[in-house]
Amino acid sequence: MIIQQMTTSSSAPATDLVSGVARLGHLGVIRATGTDAATFLQGQLTQDLVSMGLGTARLAAFCNAKGRMQASFVVFKRKNDATDDEFLMLCSADILAQTLKRLSMFVMRAKVKLLDASVDFTLYGLVGNAINLEASCARTYWSKHDFEGQSSVFLYPGAGSERVLRCIPAGLMPPQGADLPLDTWNWLEVQAGIAMITQPIFEAFVPQMLNYESVGGVNFKKGCYPGQEVVARSQFRGTLKRRAYVAHGLDHGLEQVHVGQEVFHTSDADQPCGLVAACAANPSGGFDAIVSMQTSAALSGALTLGSPDGTVLSLLPLPYPLLEDI
Image (cartoon, rainbow, N blue to C red; front, side, top):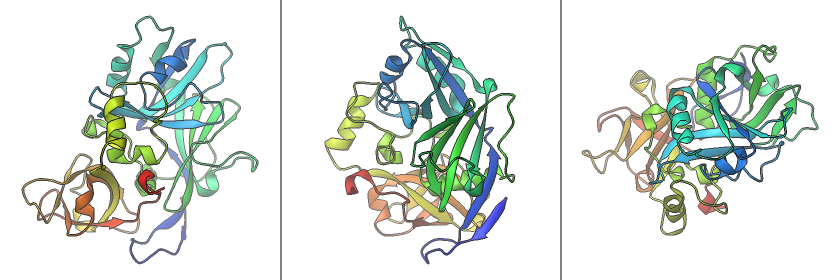
């Protein structure tokens, strides 16, 4: 791992520009193939996949009827030798089996096959100088570049570092670059401000509670999908009362923080105001977390982890603008 010191604002803990390659063994792959693959996924996910070309990827959520997220994916279309569409859906491995089972329940007569393809691909996270792609390729968020059967998806940057998720068919050589610890990649994920659904937060949030509408995870112009009415109503018929925030905690809370943990505010010692959606150790000390919580709790007062007497959390600036502010 190559680390270079960068200047930071006084409101945030010290951060580093990072470079390297991490094996992302905590992620899995669902493959969807068939002449109806695009239209089937269009009716299940929060994204417009019918119009998606080979040069882009999309963040998407799979919700229940109440709009609560059961899974989230990085989805992209892949070239194959047949005329059928082929989509790869990258998600947390701990929810893959149950997600595949739930999606398969809706296939019915659609000409689509859903399979766990995790053994067919190896996933890597590339950061900084390890991203070795020709200069002419698009390097915007959710753009995708294909080369010799490999797919590289540009993600939101973390702590100022450019990041790519690379999907490589099994058996091919891994990307070249210094080893990057998975813990460091996870910290960059938190710094990017985008939490993926894992088992501890299954059905805990509607997409806006994790800011998905602000980072390209929801398309409000596409057709229906499970929970679509709830998601649309949350956006257009009232003020959003819960949002995702990036927070920092000190070293003494590092061993206690975990996904799904409650967060408290000084205004109410009995009821939590939010949940930890993602967390990781900060290389400069302490930990960082994505916390989904009541927007009123972010205005003033103190936030604590796990209990009213727990580790104090300090909010950091979001790395992207919220949709309502654009």
